Length: 248
Image 1 (cartoon, one colour):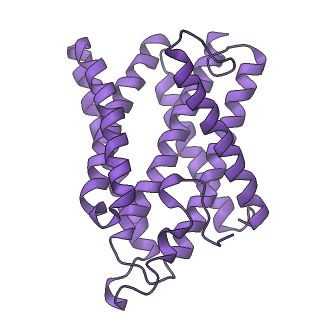
Image 2 (spheres, rainbow, N blue to C red; image 1 turned 30 degrees about the vertical axis):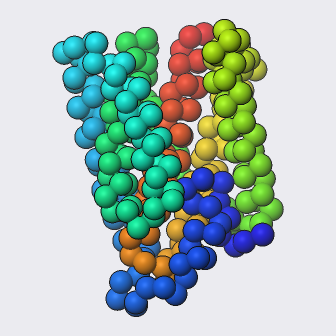
């Protein structure tokens, strides 16, 4: 299996390998560039989320179209970006805007149900990100082939479970665990949060390795987009876990 394997669908194993050595030395992806682009996308996402949040406060009816438009619009942009990586400097910010609109609406719904939940989820997401970055940078967590295979398998299993749950909802069938506030439901959400956090290590490793391969500079935007996918997933899963704990 490839060294650059990642469970993040945007950062799959062949992404950097196909482009290795295709850019001039003065116009190649760097770690600092990827970090800067990631910070830029995060700022855009937060700004869009804030806009969505305050728009909903003034007009609740805006919530549903913002959430649905953001989710499906972001999905469409993400799919296009996966096949047209050279468009990343334009599509990655667009994705951040759309995801921000959706997250703002979703977050306000959680906040209405449980006051203070969103701020706690944001702090925890930042804390998890910082801890994972520290563990990766100090090599306390080493992204070995075995580690990579375990995280990829766990992520794939969760994705299949969620997809099945989405399909079954059209037939009024609720999958267990996802929304349950029982002990087993909370344990399930905790496991998903851990898996999402471990994906950050894979993403850090993928970006670090890719920065040494001489790929075009626009891949900084694409890599930032992939990292943002994981952060959004982590935040949503932390929100879900906290809501279950508060429900009890």
